[in-house]
Amino acid sequence: MTKTTNGDLLLKNITAQSPFPICFDDLEKAVAEKMEAGPFGYIRSGAGGEQTLRNNRAAFEKYSIVPRFLNDVSNVDTSIKLFGKTYPTPFLFAPVGMNKMAHDDGELAVVRAAQQLKIPYIQSTVSSYGLEEVAQAAPTATKWFQLYWSTNEEIAYSMAARAESAGFEAIVLTVDTVMLGWREEDVRNQFSPLKLGYARGNYINDPVFMASLPDESFESYVQGVLQNVFHPTLNWENVRELKRRSNLPILLKGILHPEDAKLAIENGIDGIIVSNHGGRQLDGVVGSLDALPAIVKAVNGQIPIILDSGVYRGMDALKALSLGADAVAIGRPFVYGLALDGQHGVEKVMTNLYDELKVSIALAGATSLPALRNITLVKKDGVDEK
Image (cartoon, rainbow, N blue to C red; front, side, top):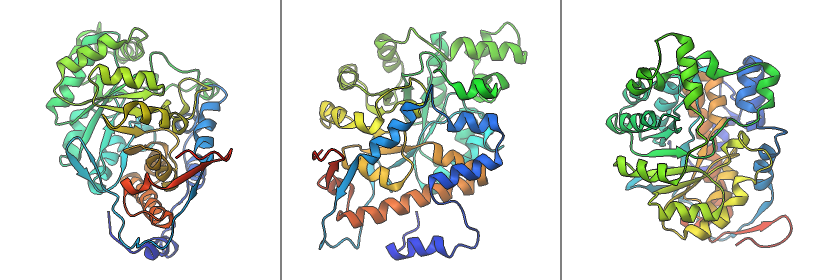
């Protein structure tokens, strides 16, 4: 990302010739005016009464920073290391499926933005474009593949093998989608992107999936996806077998309980993404940030921990990093940027998040991400968290 002085970061936005929504609420409002109700509702909404969605935001608002001053903060290092590689920011693109709902270029625009910004990109199983197409679109980007298990396990193994062959550098197994969450907004709008074919990319390019269909009709494809994408039998033996079959690091996405984090380490998992699926699966679930400290304690530095769900601001990222996350994943904000202006919109949103993060780290009195862990955070109830 472009290096500027902290003062320039704000002035750059104030003097922009083409104003672009800078905060999450403005982004969401602009996208609501542009998109149809079905696709927008799918992206925006959470499960059930959306308590989990609200819990994610409330978790960040519980914490306040006690900054330190009279430190030289003229140079702030925001770099991180993950699996032997160094990145300039602590961000990742969270796996968000069916990006063609937001923009015709879909995942291709996002991965090109990721390549430009040098931010790792996690591609969803239910992408509009296949992983091979994504790999070709941004050959130098760091790409990870998010795997939804399949009822036919051989489809899952096939997709993981394809990802490895295409140059993806890690597998992110999502564990909280054993069945579809209770999504009232989609029922209200009578909208199912799976049934409309927005998730075709990886499935129609998978030989094991295609061989399992009675024919190559669109109806057979839809039924095949619906029969496979939810997988209530997923268990630790499946995780161990995936680990045996892949040469890539395996991360589990959806971990919220410290005992599950311990089991992940016992089963040879290489990383954890603390996530409640952006509030879209089980309603009434703890906010991801609230779950983070206990998982950090349980993992005790043995493997990387990434915080996902509800990160809408650079300040949110600062709080997660201060509480022990090694990186944070950004989801809805970049999708809104995609909907507004394709690749450029994605880059603009992620750059704004980064600019806010960098300024905030300095104003908190830190000069690096490790130093953030020494910053005091106070919870709303007045009890110091660290």
